[in-house]
Image 1 (cartoon, rainbow, N blue to C red):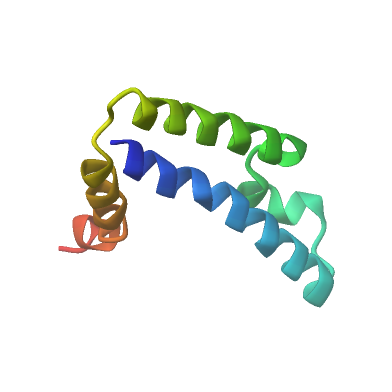
Image 2: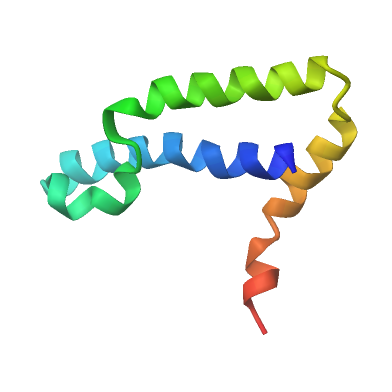
Length: 83
């Protein structure tokens, strides 16, 4: 589960890059990028908190192989949604 959450949380970081690109290339402002801005100014702080919690779980005996497998399976989300 931790790997899946890791991949989903990473999307908030990617959203920040998308916002910058869309603003720079198309002039789209905050209202037009609200969906991908997610946590706004808090993205960095929330990411660090999540990453630290995940590391604490691994340090406490979490199964790193299972976390890796769940991260990889998250990339197959399109298969869950496609009939």
